[in-house]
Length: 184
Image (cartoon, rainbow, N blue to C red):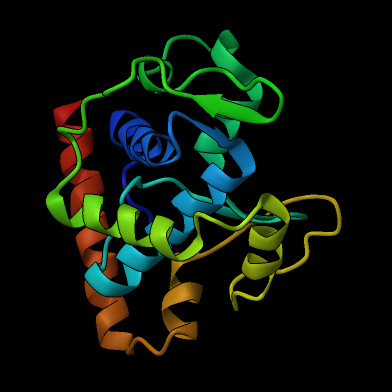
C-alpha cells in the first residue's frame, strides 16, 4: 500500500500564505507550487511526514501537489475551501494574500522553519529555473503531456532511506489516516 498522508486544506493554505507573505504578498503560482512541493519533500525526508499531506504528481513542468494545483487552476468553482480564506484566485499567473497577516496556527514551528528555509534556498528562482531544478529530482518522470502520481516511497528510496525507515513512515501515515477517518 502506498504511503499517503491526510490532506489538510487549512494547513496547506496557511503554508502557502506563509510563502506568499515572504514575497511581499504576491507570488507566481508556479513558484508557489514548487516551493510547497520542495517543503513537503524536505519535511518527508527529515521528519518522516509532509506538511500539507497533498499527493504529488509528475507533470510536464515538474512535480506538483495535486490538490493545491486544483485550487489554483479551478478556483472557487469547486465549492468553498479554507484555501480561499488565505490565497486569492490567480491573476496574471500570480496569487496573493486575502488578508495581509494571515493566521498560521495549523503550522508547527518546525514547519514554518522548513517553509522559510526552502524559500531562502529557492525562493529567488523564477518559475522556469524552479521547473528545471525539479526536473532533476529523482522521483520526477516525464509524463509526456499527462500526469503520473509520485509515490512517496520513491522519494524515500531515492534519497537512501532504509526499508525499515520507509515502513515506519508508512505505518505513521496509515495511523494518521485512520484517526482522520474517525474524526470525520
